[in-house]
Length: 165
Image (cartoon, rainbow, N blue to C red; front, side):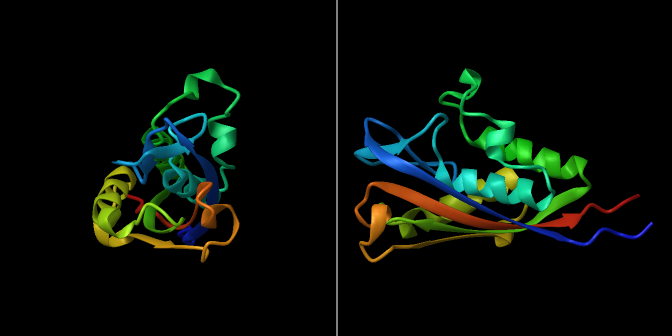
């Protein structure tokens, strides 16, 4: 049987910033006077990664697996969504090869949190830290991210075939 080719998927997510919410990015809690609002913990970084992994194995998107209309996901940690996506990929015969994630925001500054974010993502994806890249950009104060109304994230994931024994 032929070995399947590597697969590539993309993900994108947006959540608004709101007072009284915790700020979670890439599975790391960041001290802030505002956090991201959403049905779960609203971690845009992890949500984009989940969509990228699910997309790469042709398994839909985060909303199909964790519908916001389902109250059981209210306040849920997005880390469990990542674990689920990795398991879906494994059952499809793939493992995560690498992930490249871009966080789009004016604040917080991502640099001081980059290494803990990469480490947490690597742990959740069961890969080495060298297979995870986290970077950030601004929109030069344009649009909703520029006005600090929300944070966006985009991700690319490469899945590689599991070795058959």
